[in-house]
Length: 555
Image 1: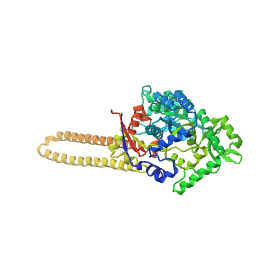
Image 2 (image 1 turned 90 degrees about the vertical axis):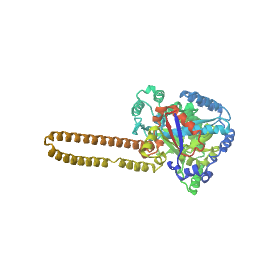
Image 3 (image 1 turned 45 degrees about the vertical axis):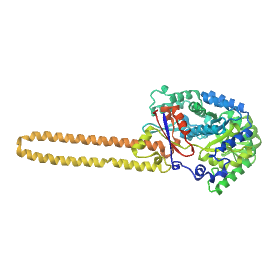
């Protein structure tokens, strides 16, 4: 397995002004962050913060991580990482991901690879254990969780979904996996032409995970553990009762200090807008930034006079009873986007967060909120922007006369692909081929008629020869015409297929590759593909530049 990384222009990324500054001109946005993610000293400074600020029992944290990941079938490198978490010098690089069907999409893979590589580098800088941890958030957006798009080897998109659809706002932990998962796995194997699922390690992992899991989020966590625990990755499921219990103190504090949180977010919004950026959070007054699981689904809570109510006024909780209820039934409450990083920092010794564009902007706006919880913000590292091109896509790009840099550009890439498709199809010259044969037939008929007139004068008895030869020449020309048009049609089909593969691999349904499943690559190369990608990333110095990741199966 060989993986090659090629630096790409930042034009392949769809980024707003704030994230562009975060990546390429940090001085413009440095006032919104406590650390410069480009500085090696950020890790050393953060290490000092953790040693003085992290108050949880490390042994208890390590045993909790060890127990959960052992139950999910973690491999020895992850279990050893959990044991190292007992050390006072240990910390975690945390990447939060949304649970998704069949392991999610490329955005999940980008986040996990980011956590692995940042953890490795920070371990070297800090000379202490830094563990990659994937935090699976408690999600209730069914459209993002229960569907997946898979690209087969000829560029055809297959859309898979777990049926039946749950009621609106149902958390992933309450979505049953069975019986729908059997149909999803069968359709996936047919789409990818997996004839012997038991002989394919990734198919076998999916099938085994489906037997062991009861809910969508448990399936997702077990699958991530099966894929990445060999690289020392630990997984935390926010939807589990034990995780909720550990983050209760943050939610209780948020309920009491709701006005202070709102004021700090308003200050953050004004600062962003004064600097010329758009604030990500523009919620109305009274939002408390935590959610409650009710009989009608998950609801965001709002403070209204003496009660906490939901956005639809379908239920309310007296203010005085909320903090007690959080202690008695912690599984009912979960943090929203503002409180989640603070809760993670309460539960784990977080060295750094891996963030995409939206998360980075939320961190910037909520910087002042952390002091309310007596916490200090960790370094925020950008998630890696990786564009994956396997052997088939790379070969199709070469035949099409395109580079991945041109074809993958955000916004422009689809137009570049379409313009080149038209040029290539025009150059195939179907009309010129037909015109050439029509002209050849006319010339051939003229030659045969001239020869026949001479034969009639010289050899009157040659009429039989003439008819036989004329038929033979006509058949020969017809055969050439058929062969030529067959060749053209074959080249036309191949060209159309190449461009369909390129477009669907890089811009599926007009979207980003990040929303496409990475299962096809796993089916062919399994964990070797992940390990080879990590090895290639370790040799690159500047990780916040976009890269094209090309792999093949050669040694």
